Length: 88
Image 1 (cartoon, rainbow, N blue to C red):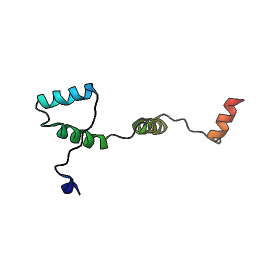
Image 2: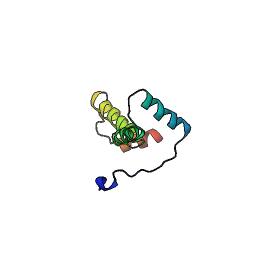
Image 3: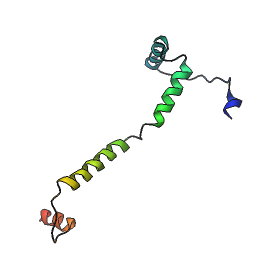
Image 4: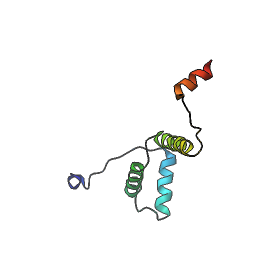
């Protein structure tokens, strides 16, 4: 399918800031064209977790580490009972 689309161009509108960034990257030699810039951006976008997912992953890892290294064992009481006791 991509071969059928080769040579076709699509115009997109971007802010002046983005346009300057693309031009600066091309002028620096990092990218040969706006197409290269956009392709690199789209490929790197795939490697970024959806918003919030990275934070949740870090939070879960921190909780698990705490549970392994610093948790106080509850003997004869459940977490729910402890929470209820704290509310009294």
